[in-house]
Image (cartoon, rainbow, N blue to C red; front, side):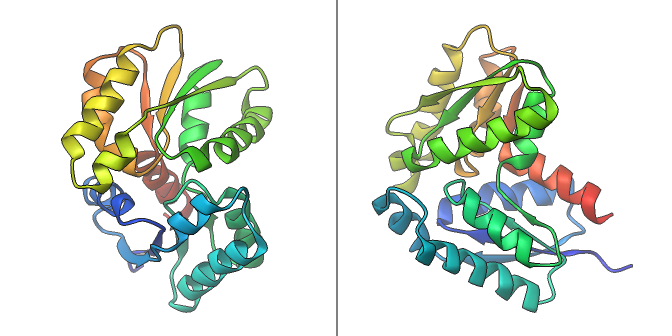
Length: 218
């Protein structure tokens, strides 16, 4: 059997390095195809919600991946959850939201989850997705979100060191949680620094997504 071909669909360039690093470490045999549409992120930031036009663009990208004979699709931007769900319902291959695997892993740790996020438009949708997963896996699970101000601006300007320092500082102040989630693919670059300052289990979207895709496709 040939290695699965997986489309990685990005709405921002800063999500690309973390997921490709996760594949290189955990599943180097997989063939990954990177699709970048970097007008999606700023357009989403301008909208109060996911518009029909944005949803159609998300579906068009997933359909392109299917037509390119990909075996699965993974979106790496956390601000398009409902649009990705709609695309998944229309295609005969797995189409994963960025964070569903991370949510599953975090919820399995217990009741209280802290989420460190850097892109404000993503928070509400991610919390809604978390509650859906919690209802299925552990109805008592809860989430509390913390905005790491300035982090995404730093990494967008090429200053990953400042990004990681800010996320690390935010994580160091957390107490009485069963799990910490680094909300976005771009935030995953701070995984090691965060683990240095907390004994709470820390989860990132890329690593969890790769693990779930391996289970689905192998």
